[in-house]
Amino acid sequence: MCINLETLAKEVDRKVEPIYRLIDERALANHAKVLAAFRKARVSDYHLKGSTGYGYGDSGRETLEKIYADVFRAEKALVRGQIVSGTHAIALCLYGVLRAGDELLSVQGEPYDTLGEMIGLRGESQGSLRDLGVVYKQVDLTGEGDLDFSAVGQAISPRTKMVMLQRSAGYRWGAALGINKIREAIEFIKERKPDAIVFVDNCYGEFVELEEPVEAGADLVAGSLIKNPGGGLAPTGGYVAGKEKYVDMAANRWSAPGIGAEVGPSGDFQRLLYQGLFLAPHVVSEALKGAVFASMFFESLGFKVLPRHGDHRSDIVQAIMLGTPERMLAFCRGLQKGSPVDSHVMPEANEMPGYGDPVVMAAGTFVQGASLELSADGPLRPPYAVYLQGGLSKEYIKLALLSAARELLRG
Image (tube, rainbow, N blue to C red; front, side, top):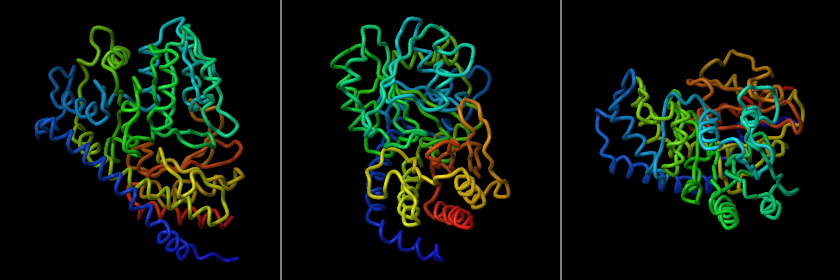
C-alpha cells in the first residue's frame, strides 16, 4: 500500500492541535517563571560578558546561578561551562556527597547506561563509586513499569545515604517519572528515613511540567545545558541545584575543597547561557509538540510508540519501537538526511564510551551532542527502539521525521 506521508502529516497535525494548545499554556507559565527570575536578578548587559583565568568576581556567573536557583526553587545552584555533560553533573553529585561505606539506592532498576561504569556495575574503570567503597543497591520496577513501593520500603536501611531517581526512562521502554510520582516517592522515602538525600537526574525533564523536582521535595538535582535548559543555544555546560549544603559538596568535587564554586571563568559564551535559559521554555514546548506529532505519525504507520500522543509527558523523549536493527539504522539515516548539519553523513552503530551495547545515533546538530536541537539514538538490543529527543522548531521536527519515514519505508 502506498502511503502519502505529506497528507498523513497534515492529518496528524490537525488531530493533535488541541494538545499543542495545552503545551502552549504550560510554556507560558514556565516562561513567566523564567522571566520573573531574570527581572528579580536585575540582569544587565555587563552580566553577559565572560571572564578568564580563575574567574574571581565573575558577577555574570554568580547572577546566572542565582537565576537557576530561583527558577528551580532551590537554595543554591552551580552552573558551569566546565561541566561537560549530564553524566558529569550527576557524577559531581554522587562523588561530592557519598563516602566509603555509604549506600546509594536506585529505585528504578539499573540507571541510565552511562552511569553503569561510574557506579561500578560493569566495566573496569578505576575510581568507580564501588571502587571507592560506596555500596550500591537497586530495586527494580514492577512488571507494569511502576515504582515498587513495598520493595523500596524494605530496601531502605540505616546506611542508605542517597536515593536516586531518574526523570527520564533512558533506554528503557517505559514511562518517564512525572513530578507527581516524584513527590509521592520522596514523601514515602522521607517517612522511612528523613535524613536520606534524594537526588534526581533531571535530564530531558526541565520545563516539561509546571514544577521541578526540588519543588516536589528533592534535595539535589542535576542536568545538562545542551539539553532542555540551554534552549538550543548553550554550547556546553551543566548544572546542579538544590540544598546549599549538597550543592557546595558537589562544587567541592567540581573544583577542590576550600575553593568550591568561588572559581571558574565563564568564558566567551556567557550570553548564550543566559539567552538559552530565557528561551528554554519555548524551545522545550516546540520539542514536545514534535514528540506528540511523532507519536501519532509513527503509530499511524503501524509502529508501537511510547508515550502515545495523548499521554501525559514528563520529559521530551519519544520512543518508537522499530523491531529490527535494520529499521533503527534506516530511521537514523533518514533523520540525519533531514538535518541542517552533516546531512551527508551516514549513521552507523558503534561502541561508545559508557554504553554497554553498540549505539546508533543521528544528530545533525550545531552543538555536538545537543539533544534539544533534535536527535535520535538507541542501543542495538531488543526491543530495537529509537529514542527521539528535541527539535528547535515544530516545523523542523516535522520535516526531519518525514525524511526518516521515507528512509524507513523505503527498506
